[in-house]
Image (cartoon, rainbow, N blue to C red):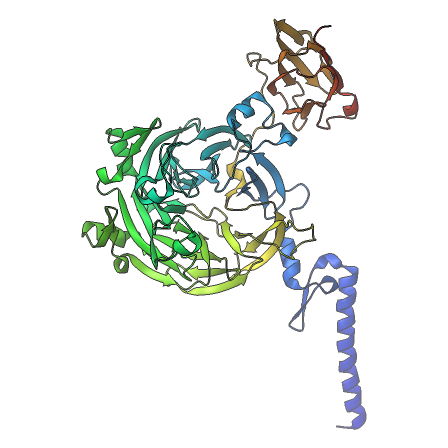
Length: 631
């Protein structure tokens, strides 16, 4: 080939390549919305952003006018609240106050919420559980526990409001709650701390093994209203009971609880409660215990039916589990239950079928405290080497399990048929629990996973020594897990459940009800009534004034105040706050709220609407006038 011709060919090819590169560059500059293009086998993205980042943004972006696919209900820990997120956007769309007053919505100031909260000023909300029908979330109610003060609460999901708080006697710290039976017959609450019962009983700590008790409560749920009541309780050994789960499908009728401190230590637990190589999963036949309660096989303890399971043979079995397991999780088909080792680097898989065979064949390896210990080698089917610090496992409905590893700061993905690890992804940092889409049901969605991380460290802008915590949204639709988004969260995300948004049916406006106590819908009926030292105010509010807008009482009067919001218009909320009287409430459209107080400070105190409601919001005000004694 002639040198001139060869040179022309080389120059032509070089020019073609340069032109192609320039064309791609100009395309990304002139049409940035086009995303990334595959050129010469490589991904070229907008402004040098990697293709993974572009895809993550596209998968989590919810455009204006569209809504998230899922709700995620996350525990608020010692804030006492539930945090509600939309997924995949991970936007926090609501805080539901439960065990703690919340001035933003007047929770803890209205008569109804004050009565529910009782004497307690805080709570430690740990493990939300959605109501279920046939093992599937049904969108009716959310139940939560208070680990600090042994309470349970119900949130009605048609209004996203706390509507009942139930005090549960005889349980010290129900950390193993809440886990729901497949048709919401009960949710179970097991004690974290052992203690003498009933409350107020004294016994020296040296009598721990003899006088201190563990207790599990079965909280019955009215299938029409969701009303909670204590069905029965069960005495348990003085061990600590951690996050638990109810059987489903093949294992329906059973519940499983992990234990630690089977050493029954009462000092230096960091060392003394970790001496054994094995603790237990407790398998509890709740159907059999329910039958015993119905047959009168109980004693009354602090007003509650207390069953001694030793009087009900076959109701409780012990299954050895690796050292100090943190939680137990039942697979969607109910065939396996998995203990997460915490201190041991494995997730132990147990077969429910083999467990039943051991019971039928009386294949036990001894007993402890009168309960049979099932043969570990027979009931265990795998010890999956997931890594260091396994705490919690979720499922995707496609045959995979996902386990958080607190020490490794990773999540391991593994197969439920071969028990092989197929993927591991780093998270930031120290994940405790995780939440898969519909992950605790018989039919998980297998689309998203949220890692609830205990530490954030350097993930977000610094806000001083008190850091936010971290949640990370993970894509499960590809073979390899991919992190789509990091979001800061308030303390403390102990647990969460994620439900398809279309399962929840809400209402936005209270219906007009002339029979509602204290309700006023016409200004002619707004009034102030006095009966001795008792004053009742019937007040009407609408954009942009109150009737009456001046209220005068005498110092020392007991005041009962009703406020009715007569704006029957979605999202038009009226607040009501009295300056320097520590009072603030909120009335949703059509709602009547009630609060009570003693007018113990003489003087003039403005009141005003605390929710911006209209262009004349500033004019929505009045005066509370307290006439001094002796005048």
